[in-house]
Image (tube, rainbow, N blue to C red; front, side, top):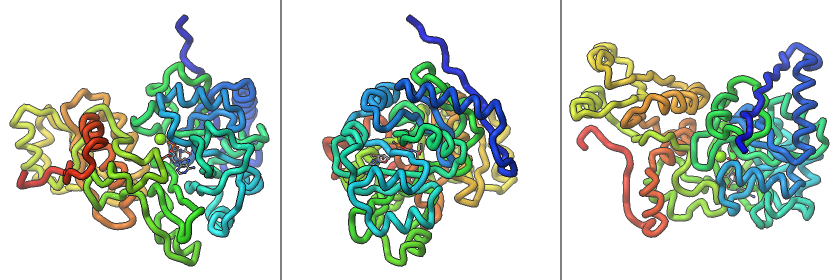
Length: 379
Ligand code: TXA
Ligand code: MG
């Protein structure tokens, strides 16, 4: 039997208001009931929307994997209301985790720590660690506090696709696979949290995100290692297992349906693609009007000027890719951002998005092949 689409309930809590308004409180009550009954609720966070179930309810967590089409080998992040809740889920509490939680929580950073026995195997994919995050989004923190139990929540999209930064993206990707969507507006950061493994010395960044390495080093007073691929190597390095400690960071990820190419291309290069009959969306830093005007007149090109500030770029990236993915183009070309720490998380996401589905399969057999997905002016 066909299920009806999920309700999308608007939730809002203006910062100057001491308490959320009644419709918002009512929406949180309903979300609480759905979660306690073992259902799935999409929640707003400051990074991307999450697909939440009560983390201590194995059956409910199983539904997350089914709804996303996610392999059970990929563990989930557990979202907590505060540090005390986080500690109750940890078997051991490393000093680095303590410092991060004290100074950067609530916020867009996830710590990986030894797990406590109460965390179900399905959440950790049977591993000995658990990933914990206290979101800055205060409505979601309020929801978790109301429940009194943590929420397991991966990004609220079908596996490997683009993460959702609006409630509309969630509905588009998951449809009636989710019971209820809380619409807290567009996500402020727009890319997924930084993930830091605190079980090693020095701590390791497993996924680059809104909190950059230099911020983390300043807070911790020590150097941190980046294990994650961050846009400075070839895509085959991603597949080579350098990131095996974080299973979800392997190969293709965060991808629109339309093939995406990273480029160091100019307007002339895009013009050549159009002449060859391609319909192209171009996310570009170029602002040379003279170069762009002729191209913009072509019905085969959509030019999307992108901001030069990495944080603003991140906040718009997925929304832009979601929108352009609707246009049935032949390809999306994205100007390669600079190779600096500030752009690391964005280069990481774009590089993963540029790996095609067949490449993903072939690379799992031959990860040593040198390969570049970026096409260049001379190509
Ligand atoms: O911003 C975010 O982190 C969002 C919001 C909803 O909080 N969540 C998110 O979850 O991006 P997900 O499942 O899409 O990505 C979580 C990443 C995956 O790469 C997963 O492999 C990794 O974190 N991860 C989870 N538990 C882990 C663990 N115990 N050890 C290492 N990596 C882990
Ligand atoms: Mg995800």
